[in-house]
Image (tube, rainbow over all chains, first blue to last red; front, side):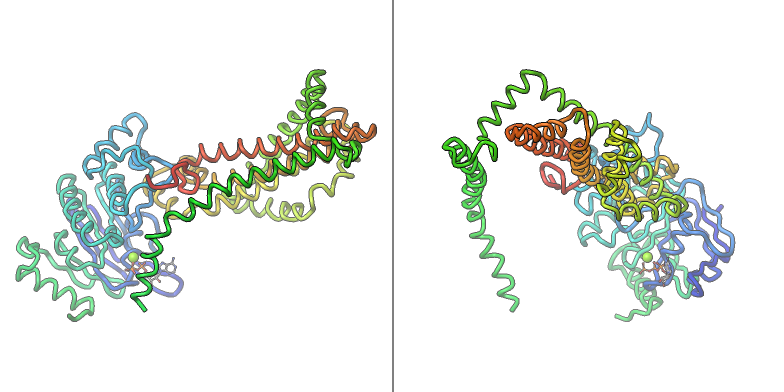
Length: 229
Length: 280
Ligand SMILES: Nc1ncnc2c1ncn2[C@@H]1O[C@H](COP(=O)(O)OP(=O)(O)OP(=O)(O)O)[C@@H](O)[C@H]1O
Ligand SMILES: [Mg+2]
């Protein structure tokens, strides 16, 4: 049974068609990464799945409980960290739930800090906690690590892998980082001309950075994105 | 090229730590000593008779007058009248400005109805309508409230609209993703985001409130510190006049301090207002 089912969805800006009869299915608990050149419509697709933008045609089935982590943390600067995590939750359990979510991302002792006092990586972890605390069936990630330094990014990969394994939401990760896509996803999609152009199942062996299957998949994906090394 | 660019800041950082501190001490001292000396000079000139008391009384005699008027209860009475007037006018003006500002900030329809009218009326210096106010309200209290309210409404309105416009749309989007209702979105994201601007509007409104009060009380008020000054003019009591001027200055300073305190409390999250200056 698919958690996300998109059939022939179309999205236009003026006379420019960004999504062109796109089909997409994501299974329950599946981690899907989406690659594509800049401006090919990845964010547009993600926003449509999030319900932030409408589609102009096609049918779209998404679960009720879905959350987004954006490239920027989007924390309310006038709320302490824990309230940001608990935003929109029923008051009675808010603090406790926020606290345990913050523990999961390793920021339990920052619960009462102001967001401005956080580093970029910490803020992004809070955003992740905010997304997970509502126990989403669909987790949408739009380049959530793009603004982080390389070392922090590696740590975040580990964190996201652990958390998604534990909570098992369906995940759509939009990224520009081919390595990241292979390391995290069960399935890697590439997008071109408003459609899903190719689908690659990631075998367990390919998740080993530096292994032969990893290198092969990496080469294929870069080729599809029009990059030659 | 690149070596000088790197070397420059480094040498500066090594030596730059001390000079500002050395300068800071005399600056503070001088900035307080000079006004004190001027006050002293004024006192001496007035006492020696170089400045006639009808022109400018000595600071000490202004002080004596203040003490005397406080004892008789006259000063507290007039001060209370003025403060009450300002408070009522401000409450009405700020209330109307805030409500209209919030409506305009949220609703295109409200903006279409309200905004241009306000922009047009705002082009008039609000004190210019004083004669009209006197015709409408006579010398009664409501005319004075009206004038203060008018002067405080515009800065609050404008800054509320501006503040709401400047709220980061990405935060609103996040609120929608988190499933906030419209009313909760206003509470969580919009009003706090607009608050720095609204508080700035309040400070500007306070300035206008005192200005309106000075004018309103000089024309036909039965009480208030402006009335005191007008009355004193008839009898050439320059000490009372100077006292009233000093009072206006003190009131202005006090309300500004209160407004700043409010900012520090309500905007503790804001790096520009936080007492520790942002990151811990
Ligand atoms: N609000 C908008 N109005 C008009 N055109 C838009 C709008 N949003 C996006 N577009 C256009 O739609 C296309 C796809 O944009 P989108 O943001 O989905 O790209 P993307 O794949 O996420 O790119 P990137 O990798 O750079 O983030 C772009 O050509 C962009 O110019
Ligand atoms: Mg994008």
